[in-house]
Length: 117
Image (spheres, rainbow, N blue to C red):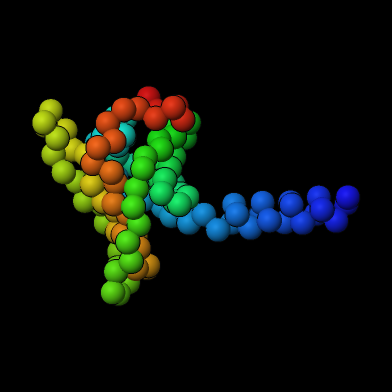
């Protein structure tokens, strides 16, 4: 029984550790999954087909697809698109020091249940 518990806890720890974590700085106000993000530093965690951006108590989840580039990106960059309301929406994030490009689902429009704004 004890061995099973230890194995389960170890596997859970590996699953948590395998989530990709990055720091991202937004230089302008932007909308993600219906929530407004103010300029500043955010923690970005990728878990499968979901991204979570966190800053203080604000936590926004959004569906994503992750692509690999042919080479590593020198710096982290955020690409925006302008919505019908004129506000900037996060379209993709290219993670510096990696070959990872995170593309946000353009159909995501409703605030997340994870406690957006």
